[in-house]
Amino acid sequence: MPQEDVKLEKLQAEAIVAEDVEGVTFADLGIGANISRVLAEMGASSPFPIQAATIPDVLAGKDVLGRGRTGSGKTIAFGAPLVEKLMENSGGKNRRMGRNPRALILAPTRELALQIDRTVQPIARAVGLFTTQIYGGVPQGRQVGALQRGVDIVVGTPGRIEDLMEQGRLDLSEVVVTVLDEADHMCDLGFLEPVQRILKATAEVTPTGARAQKLLFSATLDTQVAALVDEFLVEPAVHEVLGEDQSSSTIDHRVLVVDQREKDQILEELVAGPGKTVVFARTRAYAERLADQFEDAGIRATSLHGDLNQSRRTRNLSLLTSGRVNVLVATDVAARGIHVDDVSLVVQADAPDDYKTYMHRSGRTGRAGKEGTVVTIVPRNRRRKIEGILDRAEIDADLVPAAPGEDLIGELAAR
Image 1 (cartoon, helix red, strand yellow):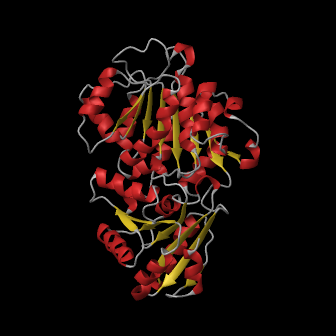
Image 2 (cartoon, one colour):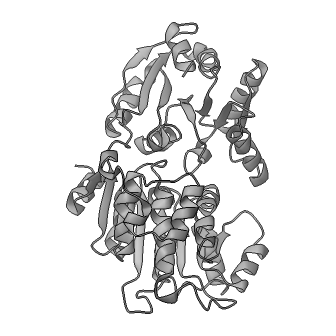
Image 3 (cartoon, helix red, strand yellow):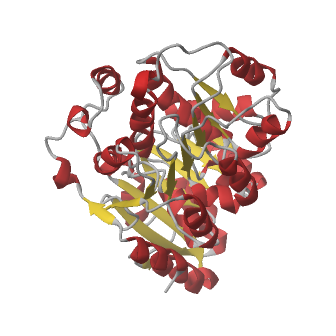
């Protein structure tokens, strides 16, 4: 039995479905009026299943382990109760300049850190608390300035956070709630040991003597993530949302077996539809070439990959978000933590190497219960490999031979 299945079986995950939370409000879960009002303004008028499952446990002071893909609403699931917890025992009063943060949210990439902060910041501001973003790739001056003024919640990536700790500019000793979002991806990027050091630098108990909390969210629970759970989470409440996993009926998975010479033409036909599409390519050069090919064919497209600086990456992503382009061709830098509403189609121009990559690429569509389609293009000699990946991800998908101009490709493009 795979490691993650062993772990979940041991921890007895509580499963919740959408029907379980019909009629439930954020107030019913223990969220105050100010935060509930801001959530409604953000479009979250009622809780998603993962939110209804985890919020009461966070407010009760428990450690939480949440398993589920992005798009299930987990940022609010930890963000809203985290802010509510910081307000306990007059936590929103007498906030001095230069105060140390009391909550920390760790993310694997700066894109995800920025996305999390965009959701958590208005929730925090509703009750007079402040957040700041700490991530690499930019000068640290603005980040250090924010810390010197004093913040309540730090959202950031492990590398820059540990760097500022070593410089003596970031003190985590008063952090009483720590969130690890997409813990599996942090471990994949080699951040296991930095994360362990960061967690050890946070408080063990709150000022009232209660145990400090750890909240860990992950799409998969492989060996390294299981090690974090074992070391830092104490009797966690474990939640999994049924109906929002990769085999959910909201996502239609297709695999097209193609002749390698016809692959690019098939891709061009697939992305010609009216909806928003994210195409995944293995290399930066192929991503650029496909984006150029689509543009030459009159399809509005752009690219996203590691050779672009942060401002270009942000701009290109906003082109898709705003609808100025229909197609984003990306390497796996975009597979995690990129939230674009109403992506109807994900196309894997290059099949992934493992099931975790498949799951996270697929997570760009079918978000929050909406319908989506994932199409994987494979040459004939990759059939067995993709079958193994689908089996590991517990996904049913027929492998269908395909050629340019076929009705199936037009049907998929029209979604």
